[in-house]
Length: 382
Image (tube, rainbow, N blue to C red; front, side, top):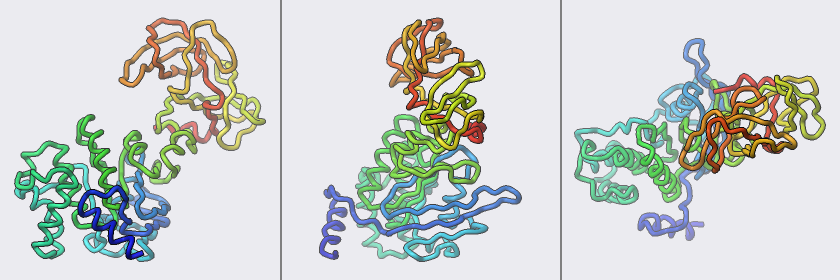
């Protein structure tokens, strides 16, 4: 094992390896983590196992508990209950600086009076690393974030994206056991967010990091993560790969938060195999059941805009409903069309065809894409 590990370390230092270095931890185990603020339970029974080298995103709306969970991991908040173990060692009562975690904040938190090099070196100076070694490590990490020529500048002389790279460099230069990131891209414009997403993933892989990343942006979570932890009201609602949480949501809330948008209150007519449902306006549809459903149950049907077909007026068939185009929006990678039909509310469809307001259309909702959840999920909108 030692003979294999040494070339990996050397190659990472030279920045030419295509192999991913071994992660600095084997696993992180979180059990029953709970944090209350007065009568409010901001985090409840948070359970998660993380393998070394994984990129985990905590995803959810504001106030769902994701930043509270991150701050408990960092040691910035003391949990009221629960355990955090890193490779078998409890870190709950270890001070933040002794946990050897790296943290990147939303607002960069750079020292404006220090140069880029001194900002990156700060953590190493606090650890009393020898000066010569500090210079070597700072040079290496600035090269990794592609800002080696900015060492003597001050933060105010850099763009927002460059400042965020410096904040990341400052966190990784200490060789953290665990990297924690709290909405690090929310202050950047759309183009920079895309660029920084690529940079963060590249650094995660190049340095063998284990990363916990907080975001409310589902696209960010889908593109960056090995696994996504979807949260709501202090609870974990689903854990899975990006593909799993996107295509196999565990609840109407999960489907809606990850872009389904079309939620229809329905009543179950039959539940053998595919589920037969009826809308409040009397339209009968066939869908795919998700959870326990029985005839007579109230339920909610969910479908993504890109899974709906827009056809010419007059076409019929299974799960095809006539409608009228209300609005048309060009969204860059397609066209979103809002359709008024016999279904509850407006239906949003994603298409490449150009429709116009007032056009008559037929909406086709494939049964395998129309997911039907029990009624208790019906109120779980964002």
